[in-house]
Length: 144
Length: 115
Ligand SMILES: Nc1ncnc2c1ncn2[C@@H]1O[C@H](COP(=O)(O)OP(=O)(O)OP(=O)(O)O)[C@@H](O)[C@H]1O
Ligand SMILES: [Mg+2]
Image 1: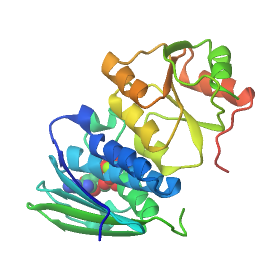
Image 2: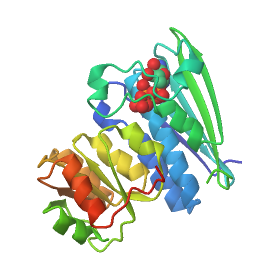
Image 3: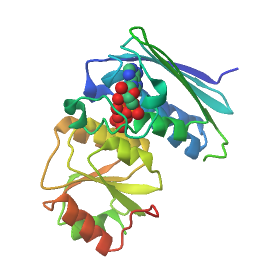
């Protein structure tokens, strides 16, 4: 049984709003009294994913399931997809254009960060169709 | 070091006033938010020349207490409002990034990572 299920639309055309969903999840987990170290890992991992949905995926949605022992984050977009996931996972690899870089993103660190802060991560991406990303963060994790 | 010490060391102006007695452990200076997000080590201060709302979001996700805009830059009101909602102190210093970081380091604030 999940304690809480949260759903968010992530608008693709408004960079200033990117991070609203992750910020809201963070607030809600705090109110639930969730483990602070786990909250921070959820927030950072989801925020990186949310930014990717905005700058690479053209917008999408987030579904977050909160259990007492874990948080499951699902990010879905219908953007261009990722042709080579293995490459995309490498630190420093990015296709972000210069305008994204001037906004402070495009270092090619997002996916590696997400891998680092989550306990489980799966990417299901089809070129021309979109990307589904699932992350699990445990309330009590050896990574914390 | 506390927030009010930073204000003194950096001749900073307060744009959003949070808890000025908040104890600060370490700091981080960058214009790349994903680089900031890569190293969580209880960093409490973010120095940056970037002015968009994602600076506040990044600080929020990392539980940081203070943002310092370098080189006299000032963000839009929207960005300041976001910081206010999250109880994050926002400062503006006339110094450039290198000098601002150097002054804080010399005053005893460290980077928090081994390398
Ligand atoms: N949702 C997505 N849809 C399409 N491509 C994506 C998506 N997420 C990531 N990618 C691709 O994978 C690359 C690496 O992503 P990653 O998040 O690691 O770095 P970045 O977003 O380019 O930069 P940073 O995250 O450091 O700001 C991206 O440049 C992009 O090509
Ligand atoms: Mg990214």
